[in-house]
Image (cartoon, rainbow, N blue to C red; front, side, top):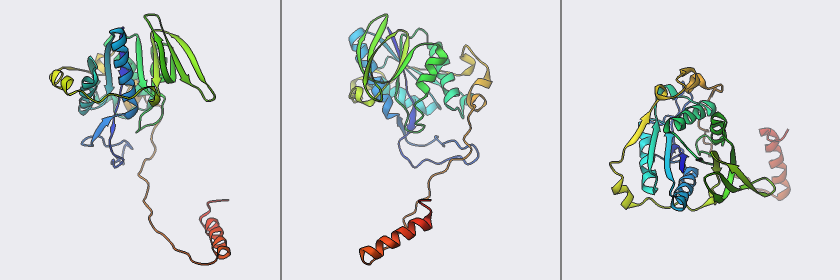
Amino acid sequence: MNITVCIKQVPSTSEVEIDEKTGNLKRDGVDSKINPYDLYAIEEAIRLKERTQAAVNVVTMGPNQAVSILKEAYTMGADNGYLITDRKCAGSDVLATSKAISEGIKKIGKTDLIICGKQTTDGDTAQVGAAIAELLDIPHTNNVLKIIEINDDFIIVDVDMPTMIQTIKIKLPCLISVEKDLNQPRLPSYRLKKATKDKDIVAFGVEDFEDTDEQKYGSNGSPTRVVKIFPPVANDSTEIWKGSSEELSTRIAEKISELKILS
């Protein structure tokens, strides 16, 4: 069995500069880490590997610095790392990102199960996993709380629905997006870090894909655009009022009306 885990490098701080012209985050030189939700996806893949002797591939899209999170995945037990890196993929929205990753997964080869984290901490759309599955034309489910059974033909999972926990049987190959309650991610292994320090990362770009149409990737392939993005303005001004409860309640009501908090 071959398992592919989709991960993303995200800023490890909220203090990130924004390119005023493009509206994109300036990721170069920013301290980054594996998207926290993706750690649960990696952990579950490693647990399945320990149960079924599966091979675990980890794939990400980003600049060359994203190699670091693939190497970290090696220290958790992943077998192979793949980096999709191409300037033609810059400025991708959900659809263009999903297109590039789906093409990358096809480039990797036969995959029985794709695991994604629930969402990323920088985009928070929670849509990429489902979009990848649609582009690959395979079944998928989100909000997976538990993997009950897996074999060469199907997987049975518990899914967190709005009003119930639903048990679903899905034919392989398929994609699942997992919740953080699924497991407790292991810490990186120093032994594996030493053993994999020279292990290769396979990198490829749009020209290596089955579909090389540049109009489907990056900003060209993104039907949505960020019109403007900016950090919130900090406002730490304070006023101290003194008076009786009647006086203060009247003043608060007047202030609410002045600020137009309530119409």
